[in-house]
Image 1 (cartoon, rainbow, N blue to C red):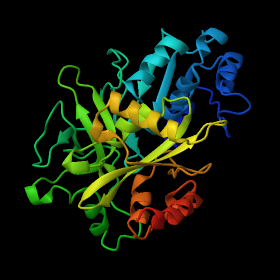
Image 2: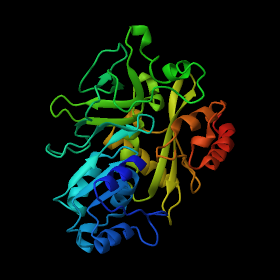
Image 3: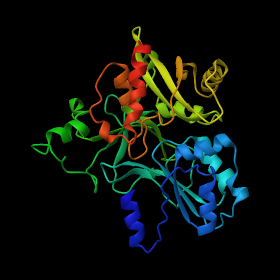
Image 4: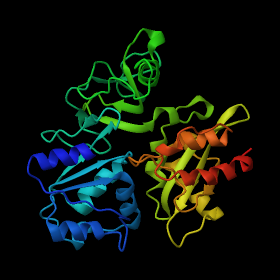
Length: 341
């Protein structure tokens, strides 16, 4: 995001940065700032929008947001209901801009196209210069089904080597180009699970492909579950993993609850029933545990880290804790490892 900010300064914009808890001293503090300083573009996360949805608040009724013309959202996947909430309860005549890319490519694979419609749950299209496709397991481009995000051609901002990679090739190729090499395809595989919609050319992101859950062989993107459970007023945040269990995969969920709530059997049942009704029986977690405050691991770019927790639960080492914003959160899962055996 540093690059976005520098670019904004380059065109004469004024940058307004907020450092701290976005919910302090009030969950709507951001909108008070938007009103006071006439902020025109507001950058935020799916987690914040889902939290406001859970509270049922209506910022557009309480604050003068006449100067706000765009909301830009990234980091994690926003549900279709989140898109609708923005237009219904924040402001109906703004441009909602959902983007997805990566720190490693210094840019976006998919993002905003201001001259096209916005469809709930979809990024509007491929970014300029990015030959993005969705590959199935046979390395064939597909539409209207979940598949791997790949970039079929060199991109303007892609890295050319890794720092510390002795021959500037081995680690780099293993990280991005080896996934489909057995099929003869030399393409950048980023590790995101997406759907490219044939009717709109929009793209829906379903989470990291290496964190895809496969109970009974059925592929489930983690965002499918997050988009449901994090709309509940009791749930502030959540994490789901797939645990190898009796020859299959069982879904285990950890929830961070809002103040004043406890993870009772009744709440567990509510979570499971809500997921079942809004997705499918396959999506329902077998086990649900309460996570401590700051117990959901995130990267510095505000992305959940299911893989690290999955490794811990299966007795594997987590090599790069330094990539986490809150590495101490993993201590809780170290304690949970034996309990889940």
